Length: 588
Image (cartoon, rainbow, N blue to C red; front, side, top):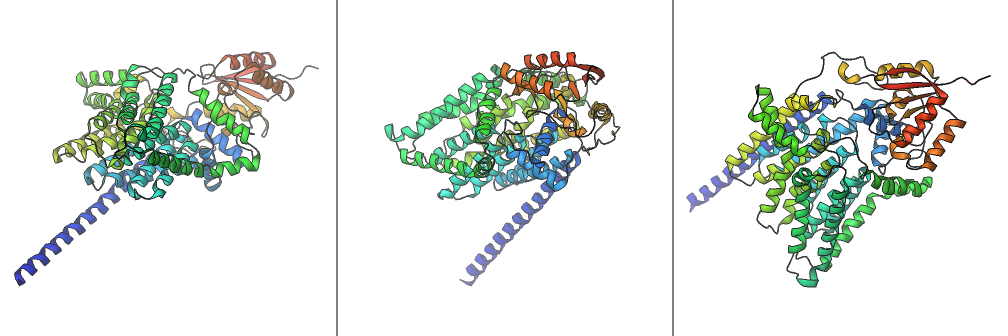
C-alpha cells in the first residue's frame, strides 16, 4: 500500500511539473509574440501614408476639436465613433497625423493578443504564427486611421468575448451585441457583416430538436440575412465571378445550410435576437446622447444611413482582379526569373485564396453541436466579404490576417505534421509580407506589386508641419510644394476649396474648408445641392481653389464647379498634377 501511495504522489508531482512547464512555455511564447508585434508596429507606424484618405480623418477630427458638430457642421458617412476617437487622439497627443497612429497601433497589438488567446490552448505554435500574421498581413500595409482597422480589432475582441464568456449566461449575448453595435458605429457595413456571423453562431449554439414550425423564427432570421447579403453582393460595384467564388459564396452557403438544418426553438431564437439587439442598442447610447445634445438626429440619419447606402452602388476606377491576381501569382511562381519573384508569386497566389480555403473547411467540417467553438472561422467568412467593396491589395489585407487565423484554427485540431506545415506556410506569408510589401507606397504598379519591388529611394524627406512622419522622398509626393503655394497666396484663417477631394490640404495648410463636406463627388448629388455651393462661391468666395483632374471622384458636379472657377479665378500653378487657382482681383 505505501508503494502505491508513493507512486500516486510521484504521478501528481510529475503532472503538476508538466502543467507548470506548459504554463511557463505559454507565457514565454506570449511575451515573444507580443514583443515581435510591438516591434513591427513601432517600426512601421510612421513610415507610410495615404494622404488623400488620411487627410479626411484628420480634417474631420480637427473640426470636432474646434467645436463643430458632426453631421451638422461636418459631413461624414460613418456614424462617428472613429471621428470621436481621432479627435480624442488629437487632444491627447497633439494635432499631427502621427497622433492618429497611436490608438491604431495599440488596437492592432491588442487584436493580435486576442488572436493568440483564441488558439493557444489548441496549439501554441499555431497561436504564435496566427498572432504575428495578424500584424504582418494587416495594419502595417495601410497605416491609416480608417474604421476598417478598428472594426477588425472589435471583431477579434468579440471573438475572445464569445470564447471566454460562459455560454449559458445572458450577458454573453448582450455583450456580443454591444461589441457588434460598436463595430457598426465605426463602420456600418462591417458591423452588419460581423453581426450576421454572430447571429449564425448564436443560433447554432442554441440548436436543439425543434422541427417544422417550431423552428420557423430562426429560419426566417437566417433567410432575411441571406436575402440582404445577396442584394448587397448584386449592388456591389466590384462584383464579378472570381470575387463571389473567393469571398462571397461561403457565407451564402453557410446561411443556406443554416436555414435547412437549424433546430433552434422559436423561443430560443427570439431570445438570441432580443439580447443581441439590446446590446447593440446599448452601444449606441453615447451617439444618441450626442445627437440629443446637438439636435443632430436628422442629419446623422441622412448621412450615415441614406447617403452611406448610396455609396455602395457608385462605380470606381478599380478593376475586379482578385481571381486574376491569384492566377498571375501562380504563373509567376511557376516561371520565376529570381527567388524573389518565386516567393512573391506564391504569396499573391495564396493570399486571395485564404477566405475560400476557410470557407471550404467550414462547409466540409463534421457537424458540431458545440458551435461556439466555430465562431472564429464563421465570423472570418462573413468579415472577408468586405474585401469585395473595392478589389485591390489594401482591401485584401483588411481580411487576410483573420482568414489565415481561421485556417490555423482548423489546423490546430489536425495531426502534428499538418500543424507544422501550416505554421511554416504562415511564417513564409508573414515574412514575404513584411520584407517586400510593408511600408511600400500605394502608388506601386501591379507589376511592381507582384514582383515585390522596393520602390523607395532610401532618402527621408523633411517632415511636413503637422505630419511628423518618416516618409521616403518617393512617398511625400507634392504636398510640401502645394502647401507652400497655399501659404504664399492665402492668409491664415482664409478659406480655400479643394476639388473634388483633397482634405489633406486643409489640414496641412491650416486653411479652413468653407463647406460642410470634404468630397464634391460624394456630397453634391443634384442640381439643388450644386446651386447651393455655387451661391456660396459667389457670395463668400474662397481665396484659392485646387483641382485634381485625374481624381476618381470627379463627376458632373466637379466639372460644373470648375467651369465657374475658371471664369472667376486665374490658374497660377500646376503642382504634381494639381491645378491651383487664385481668385481674380475685382474690377474697378
